[in-house]
Image (cartoon, rainbow, N blue to C red; front, side, top):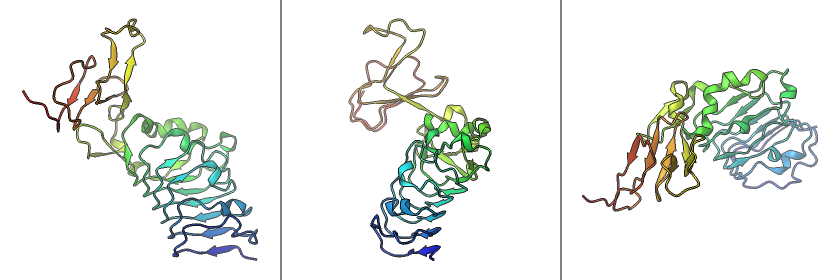
Length: 260
């Protein structure tokens, strides 16, 4: 009766769906340091599987349907994961540990780590999520409120939360800020157009209170609109945009063809 199978440190790029059909008692499958592009479907057919080690592969995405529901430990460190789909972990009621460090996740939405509150009486699973190239955008702001929103046990215990950093879009696009030091002004929303609730003229062409991002530019604001940033950097434009959104706080025109 095989309980543990190690096929690590090989050149596996694909595993047939029926590869483990005679291993119904398998509890630990070690596939780390291979060349796998996806979580093998064969793991879904192992009813007693508790630990799945997939670190050091080339996996790019995970979802609820790619991970066995009964899994307890999931190791995915050092992959190429850029997308964690919403509700990936909701049905994984036995989770104790998930390692997602050293991947390519730039945007981690709140629903990506959501758990099922029905099982909130169980100990919260420990998640590791640091060493990813997160951007300081609005979808990441929930991490600032992690301790506050987790009173219902709907989210995991993020063990390395204080080690999480995100890259600021402005003013220095290469600078990173630690999650623990970030404020609401560091997290930006991108917008193309925006009409404030008290603005009554947005349906007309000439409206002073409607925010419209100039063509070929990108626009961002923080939660309070104290930051209203227009980025037209390196767009090949020859002149300053004729119309700018009201209340612009920062305007970037570097790397263009503008002459005076």
